[in-house]
Every structure is written in structure tokens, then in C-alpha cells.
Amino acid sequence: MAELSCFRRGPPRDFAERAESCGFGRETPRRSRAARLLQVFADTPPAPGRASWSGAMNPRFGYLCLFDNPTSEAGRALTRQLILVREAERMRFDDIWFAEHHFDDYFPSGACSVMLGYAAGVTMRARIGSASFLPALHDPVQLAEDVASIDLLTKGRFNFGVASGADFPKQTVDFGIAPEDANARGLEALELVERLFAESEVTHKGKYFSVEKLSLAPRPEQKVPSWIATTEESTIRLAARKGYGLMAAATCGNEELRRILDIYKSEAPEGDPRLILARFGFATQERDEAVSIATPYLEDYCAKANATRVGEALDPQALLSMSLVGSYKEVADHVNRLNEEFGVHGIAVIPTSAQFDTVKRCLAAFVDEIRLRLPVD
Figure 1: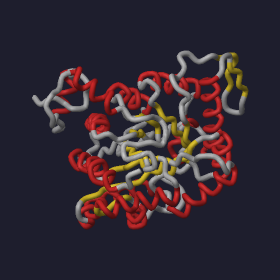
Figure 2: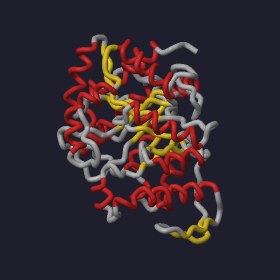
Figure 3: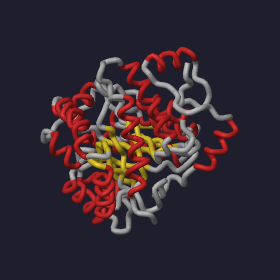
């Protein structure tokens, strides 16, 4: 049996057999552990700042994991996604992001903390992050413990992204929370989590949560960098005042993105929004091939999202136009335009395929083709 490339050491046999049955195998010969460690230390990038493998002024390249499950085989989808995480690290992605979705068989990523903990154990260089945790649905004390443990496991490589989940109110209702309370509840939870990271004997008596003289143990290794995904003006201004970064969804168009950043800058003119911009992506030598691969995925995604989200319905063609889909040159030029206009800290790529080999091809293209076409600092 071919050895899997996604484990630092040999995986348990039952897991390896399951992975092999899904068609996942190692493509490069095994090196000694010492050689691998030497390579890791030689390759370790600066973190968590702007610098990326592609250059200090270029966006960091991240992989946003949605745990696509087109065959309704959740175990297989989870296995495949976690192997792709290891592949993304091997390819030198700067960041790996995990989404939190609940009660959705197509995106079975409800246990986001579990997946992040696993990713912490099979990566050594890439920063691992939530994009995004939904703190309104969590006990903030438990969330603080989870984040602290993940950060310790990664040796200070964790990025803490949060969102209200307001676009998908059904999952909020299914947790017994009124959708109109989701944003305020999430922000109060975030405030308490951050206090637990920084203070001892924390006392908090809020509208939704209360603790009395609570000291978190263990605490994170680093001052965990935080991001908020939001379009609400009051929350954007709060993020600017507190120095949080901003996250923008793959469905956020340039006009809306400009509005969000203008609000942030008006509240904190010297602040850095450290924008993490999610974008669907697929790049090939010829544009037509990339579009033919991406279009069915985006049509399927829009149909599923429109069935459960609130607000304006997503249009597949509009989503395609804002996505990083096209020839290598077109996609590289698109990344450059986004960076020039918005000062993007990081791009979080969502491959427009649910097929394992096609996703690997997509990820490799961003590293081997797009990154090389970005300006040299």
C-alpha cells in the first residue's frame, strides 16, 4: 500500500485503509524524519504578519475548507478534506481555514474545533484558522478552552475568525437562539473569550453570559489574532476600534467590500483591517477549461445556499465574475487588482470542485502558476 502523504508518521492502519479505499496515495518517496524536519525548519515562513511565500507585499495564500460532501458520505468527505489539508501545507500555502456549518450534509463541518485540532497535529508551517467560528452558538468558556488548546498544539499558529451566522438563521434557531440575538450574543461571547485569554479571575455579567472570578488554564501561546466577518456597520466600527481584522465572504462583491473598508477606515484611519478575502477559484492554462469546471460547482453552491440563506439570492454568473476563475494570467491579474484596490492581507481560496484530484490540481495551480506571476518585491 502506498504511504499517505498527509501524515508526519505512519497513520493508524484502519485510517490508512479507509484513505486508500478513497483513492488517496502518496506521490513522493519517503524521506528520513531528520531530512523532513530540516526541510520544515528551512521552509518555515514568518507568521502571522503580511509576509507570504509569494513576497512581503503580496497577499498570503490560504485554502478555505468547506468539507464538500457530494456523495453524502460524511466520513469519506472528512477523510478527504483532512488529507487535502496536509497537501496544502506540503504545497506551501500560508494559511488553512476551516468553516463552521451546522446541520448540512453537503458541508459537514459542525465540529470545527475537532477538525482544527486534527489539522494542528498534521501541519507544522501553515497557520490554521477558523473562517469562521460562530460564537453565538458556543459557550464562550468552552470556546476559549478550545482555541487555547488548538493554539498550543500549533505552537502559536492559530488565527481566530468569527462571524454571527446571521445569513443562515435556521441553524441559529436550531440551537435555540433567536436570529435577531445572534450578532449581539456573538460579540459578547468574543469579548469574554478575549478577556479570558488576557486576564485572571475574570468576572463578567452580561446579557447572555456570566462568569465569576474565572481564570482560564491553559492559555494560548500567542496573543491570538482575531478577525470578524461582518457587513453590519456597528460591528465593522467595533472591529476597527478593537483592532480586529476583517473577513469578507466569497459572495462579497467589490462594491460592498469597498463600503466595508471605508467604514473601517473612517473609524480607525491608522488601523489595518488585515483583510482576509475568500474567493472561489480555479485556474488552468486556458480560460474555457477553468470556466467549464467552475460553473457546475457554482451553480450547485448557489442553489443550496439560496435554499437556506436570507437576503438577495446568489446568481451563479455574478459569482463566477467575482471569482478567481480563468487562465493563469487572468487569475494572477485579478489577484493583483484586488491587492492594489483593497490591500488584501490574504486570499482564502475555495476550489470550485468537490473531486479530490481536481481540488489538488486547483491548489497546485495557485502555488505553481499564480504565485509565480505576482510582482516580485
